Image 1: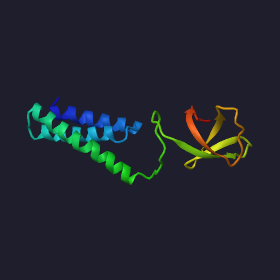
Image 2: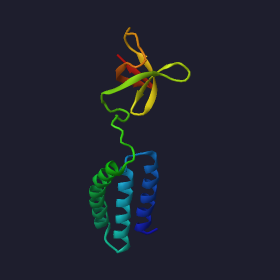
Image 3: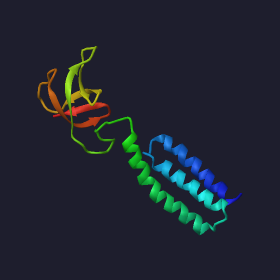
Image 4: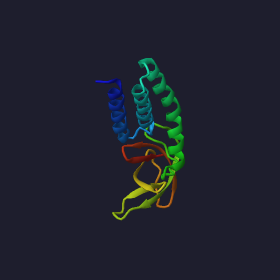
Length: 137
């Protein structure tokens, strides 16, 4: 098996991993592997192939992340899982009559961590999520 085969296999695997939602980092590394494959096809030694791969990865990872943030259809400002950001929402009753909170176009079940009485229309600060339930103060 030639070196370019390994680069191609790595590129395909990384692009499949991108489907898991890595924020274009796996795609960038997969594309960099294709540059490594091209270096192998033109006959460069392994050390040069690795250098081409690393250089392409260093350039492509931030470039794709920047482009993704600019052309992404989602304009959500909320945090991803594990990130800390203050979120606020408005309380409402859904069609089944249960109290929910609306945050950036999505709605979640709500639970108060204090003895505070909750009313429809109240604006609340979300402390964190427990599964899909918004915990408020």
